[in-house]
Length: 366
Ligand code: FES
Ligand SMILES: [Fe+2]
Image (cartoon, rainbow, N blue to C red):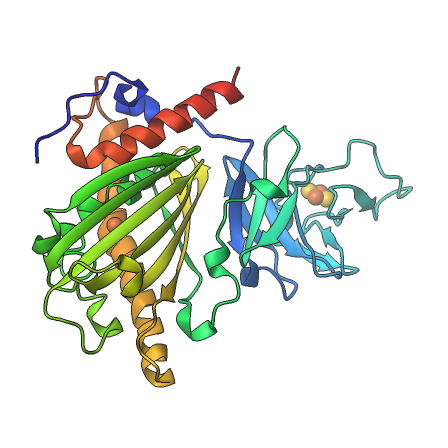
């Protein structure tokens, strides 16, 4: 396939500029999987350079407040939950509730200074995740990206809700996820193989969402999918459809089917990729997968597959994607002059999403 001409769009902005720390603040970001928060635990997360602590209140709702005491800036996440709803600072014992208000000062007259408060953030639990809003516009829960594929599915068909931190800008990870051609190289044998290089690539836009599809026909089933279908044909069609939802949520529909058949008649999984910038050079990466078109009935086999998919994906992201992406980050930021990437045909989705995200960032910063 011929490489696309270099598009004259803001996608051709020098690479350093694209990773220099532009964050869309008026958006929902995943701070944790729901089951990470609870049991009196204080979960510390830095999101877009803001230190935040999450905890579950006595009524079961999740609270998210600034993880920096108003007194001498000790991290509240090193303290403890008292009275069901308040965090006691580990240093001198000021107590803050889920709204960020200080409700108790154990010292002197016990008077609470008016400046003794910390920020609080709107938090919503949806699709088994805790979503936070850090923007100045009103938080609208209807704007949480659609991950209903995670809701009401048999536990055996869902993989571990997992996460890693990648020491790179979130946009380099979106680039990786929207360019599915890399599976044939970086994940050869597990998520792709030489047969899947020559695929038809499509890119479309659905409102502000960007969807990149790849369809490889007459392919040996990649190692990940073969066991999903015990009597699979020797050659199959392999397909992937990745949807990017601004600013950094991605949902993949992927699998294999009989050659020439409709993809939906096959088997595969929905993969969920949720990226939350920690800072300009580091990103929380939450992931899980849900099987569809399940062709294996036995619980034991399904349990084995559940573990295997989770382990294989974690291996692919942590041992194969992350080292290359982190190395890219180091190379890009240490370049002595502006870098302008060559654009290949496989970058069609990246060009599109950068255009949409660029427009949103500009609108937010007007
Ligand atoms: S630093 Fe928190 S009470 Fe002193
Ligand atoms: Fe990858």
